[in-house]
Length: 488
Ligand code: NAD
Image 1: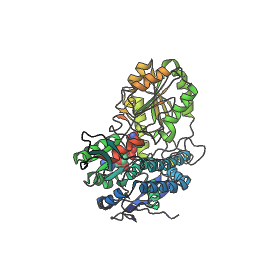
Image 2: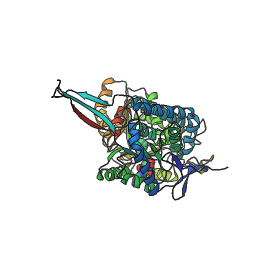
Image 3: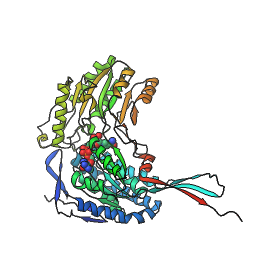
Image 4: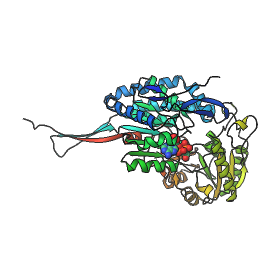
């Protein structure tokens, strides 16, 4: 079977890496499935992309917001017409189930539509002045050239929620996707290009962190960097961008708690603990990784979780019956198995899973059994650090105060859930939890595009993505004093 070689998109043209080199994208469910070859780019390609974005900057900024919105609308319709095909490719390239792959692609469509609308919202404010003859107002203007660096776990939704607002508010973009998921990045940029985005407004450069990420971060012409990924990388990106005076936004990891009280609907809570921890193989920054169970129902909920997690169908993500697909890579399998081993050595009790899965073709992919631990010590490494895989730890708590103390004891603060039928308890939790996203009676993942998204503490950089908040990052404010001639 012939294999397609995909190229970078720079200055409105699809072009090979200047080195001519490529890398492969293979399915995490089956290493024999090759999705394509992609440009293995380097500093020269980044330079060309930043040059194209810089040159396109002035005319895109002058393009009316209505015209920008129309292009985003058109891109949304193009992607919507391909949602099943692109969703299927997402499943093959990233490994989440087909329902999730199509769902995420639909989310990207929804985000494009949302920011087409946002582009048409008021872009400034009018103020009273001390001088009655002064017209005093503010106007939001684009920040300039934005570098977008994304992870592989939401290979089309995260690029969409960064690139759509960047474009809506008049910026030009250089996009560096994760090395594991270049095909989905190509599919997103194809929709934008076909929608009529002028040359240079969006530029795609595929390749490694060192080859593409480093030169993009360090280029002075890139006024802002929006980064989503792991905490250590994010911190170093922020340091470097800030040191050269650039604007930077980070969305990082999580260690998200879900607290279950005795007055909750336990069937519902167990369903949400399982889906929150295990769908997408636990590879969501908002995945539930800590179940904090009230002592009076801990045994019962633990028993149900053990049964449910131990029985999850794990395998080919394209199969209808599959609930949990592979993790992203062989390195991820080894890292997660290492974390499982260290959790056991710290005294956590293995209740389900805990190993690599093989058989039924799974030996060709990267499968880890959905894993449940009891007796997770909240102070242990397992209780504190993100695993980023299908692993849930249980800790028993005696009351709300202890639950909140443990929930808040980690350095992350992305999302959190409480399951209770007591409104007073829910409000106490909402007010006391250090998290950017709080769910009552629902799993910790789950985010709608029209509201702010981001974390407290080390999960973020005190900025927010999506919703109206995205405007804060992708624009800067100009304050204008117009002193009118005195009336004759
Ligand atoms: P990662 O940090 O390894 O990579 C993220 C991106 O940064 C990739 O494109 C990668 O190539 C690039 N990169 C890596 N090193 C770089 C460097 N030195 N310079 C420039 N770019 C570099 O993260 P990942 O493994 O792709 O993603 C998983 C992590 O992302 C998890 O920690 C997860 O919690 C986090 N995440 C956070 C959110 C959120 O919104 N908070 C959403 C999804 C994922």
